[in-house]
Image 1: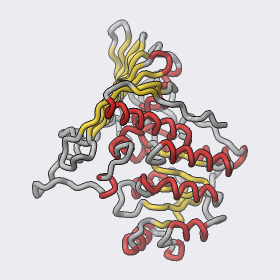
Image 2: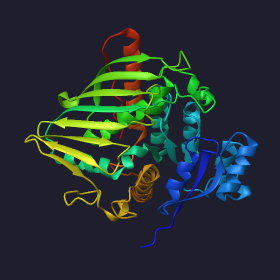
Image 3: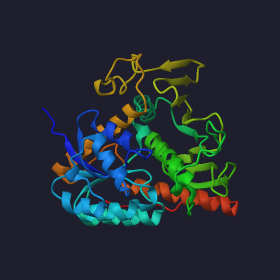
Image 4: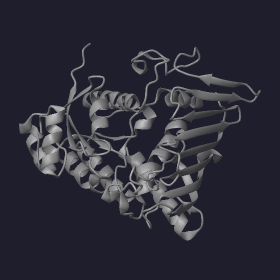
Length: 383
């Protein structure tokens, strides 16, 4: 049966942003969404130029996000919030209040307090909200999740996960520091580097194991050009079921463009996935056997599905395709929500999970300041 694409509008994400064009391409890659309106930037020239380049009708481009919500009510199926993180909460809550389904770029908010307010807005309106964590769309990472859930690696003891980058210590061609967006140079209770990178790693550990963090001990430091902005975080975390995690992320690691790597160790086997080689999953068993699995391997259960093979194995899929997989699942969740008033998907992430992640990031920040273990308070158990 032919699916009619959902009509979406963007708030933020103009052509000068880090994420806008990626969201535009990914959302529309599988014809599950079509971009029809936007308030892409607070800068009028950027706003209008974005609409022109992306083929959005000039009469559905707005200079203020509130005007978009007022004018597009009943016309759009969802709005995507792609603004800087510090202004997510206000926009998301107002969009929910006006009855829009909301897709929000991570990190949902800057604090667990803001995230809790968003959770209450979702409950009050019976609304739909999905937070995007695009790395979970990689087929071989989904394959690893399936292996863990089926017990192939046995009981999971340890996850080592890292996401080192070099953006705060790199030089441009003129030998000058590459200056990030201004909002990324203003740390709050949770440093921006934790909102940018740490939120992904919290989400990914939960995605793979369904385990929740209990307490952390951590260190934070500033080594790059933009001190005192935090640009390096190391953390030990204790999880449910006596699982441990070693977590490292930062923007001061020269040589790492985006070094996302996951290692999982159980009592029956281990596995490793590296984003720079996204098609391959390395497996090790207790007998010493080492195996490389990809989408063409006979043992895979998920990664060989047609939806993950827009082109045959051997022609690597990448970042935008993974993001498109994520949007495909959001579309399915939105369809289910429209029919039943709720959705159940292992691939789509709620405000409550984002709140838990922010509680963990807050505990990491407290631990680094107090030089001691910090417990992570549980997010409210919401229906």
